[in-house]
Length: 373
Ligand code: NAD
Ligand code: GLY
Image (cartoon, rainbow, N blue to C red; front, side):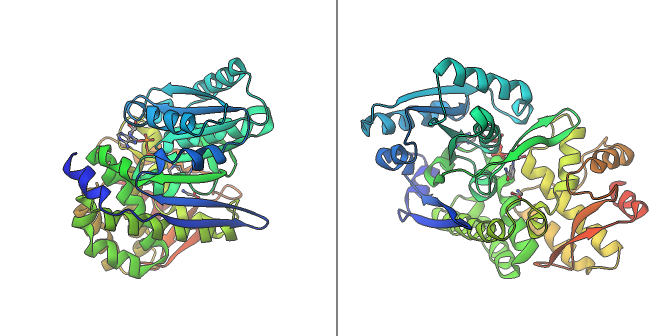
C-alpha cells in the first residue's frame, strides 16, 4: 500500500449529498471503496446492457474492479467496456461517434446504462453519448479525479469540444447517480490533483468566504492527500453545486457563477489546442484574470485578487497567462463563449472573496488590458 493509499483509506464513512431537481433527484455518494459495491452499482443500472467507458490511464487501475463488482451482483446483465485514449484532445465528435457505434454493436437499447469511469473528459463524453443514444438513456458517473468529484460529475452538463472551442456541442443530461470512490485519488498524478484543487478553491471564491479560508488553511493537507481534508472538500463542493444546480439547472442565472475563471480558461485551453494547461490549471489562471479585471473596473479590492493568487500558488497552480498567447486571439475565443448575450461579453466577476456575480456588457478595452501579460 502506498502512503497515499494508506492516507486515503483512513476515512471510511460514506457521505451522501442529494441533488434535487423538482420531482427528480439523485444521490452523490462520497467515500473510499465504493467501486467494489456491486449491489449498489447493479441497482443503478436496471436494464439489460451496461457500457463502461474509461480511459487507458484509469482502466488498468479500476476497470476490472468495476466489472467484478457487477459480476458479483449476479444480475445476468451484459456488461461491456470501451477504453479510450486519455486527455482533453479526445473529447471530440469523433470519439462520440465511436461510442455510438460501440452501443450499436452491443445491441444496446433504451434500457441501457452508460457508466463513466474516469475524469471529466470521460464523464462529459460518456454523458453526451448517454444523452444522445436512442434520444437518451441512463448514465452513472464514477469520477476518479478530484476535479470530476467536485464539479464535472455533478449537474448534468455533458459535451464535446470542437477545434473552434470548448464544450460547444453538448446537452444537459443528469446522471442517475454519482459514486465517488475517494480511494481512487491515490493513483491520480500530482498535477491532476492540483488541477482539482483549483476547482475546489473556486467554490470558496465564488460564494463561500469561510470555505475559502478553510482551503487556505488546509492547503498542505489537501496537497498531501489527507483523506479527511479531501472528503470534507469534496462534500462541501458537492453540497454547494447541488444547491446551485437545483435552483438553476440549465444555467439561466446563478449557475453561471460556477464558471468563475472559465471564460478565460476555456479560451486558453482552445488557443493551446487542448494540449497545454489542463482544465483546472487554465481555470486557476482564469480566476486570477477575472479578479484582476474586477479590480481594474473598480468592482473589487485588488488585495482579494492578490490573496486568491497566493493561495493558488500555495496549491501549486499557475496564476499567469502562458507565454505566447495573443490577447486578440484569446478575445476572439471569448466571443464564442456560451454565456455571452446579444453579442456582448458576459463574464463572472467578483466583488471580492466569496462574492462572485455575472457582469454583462464588459468594456472590451478593460478586458484586453488584463490579457496582455
Ligand atoms: P481528465 O478526465 O483528462 O483526467 C485527468 C487525467 O488523469 C487523465 O490523464 C486521466 O486519464 C487521468 N486519471 C483520471 N483519474 C485517474 C486516477 N484515479 N488515477 C490515475 N490517473 C487518472 O481531466 P479532469 O480534470 O478530470 O476533467 C477535465 C474535463 O472536465 C474538461 O474537459 C472540462 O471541460 C470538464 N469539466 C466539465 C464540467 C461539467 O460540469 N460537466 C465541469 C468542470 C470540468
Ligand atoms: N462547471 C460548471 C457547471 O457545472 O455549471
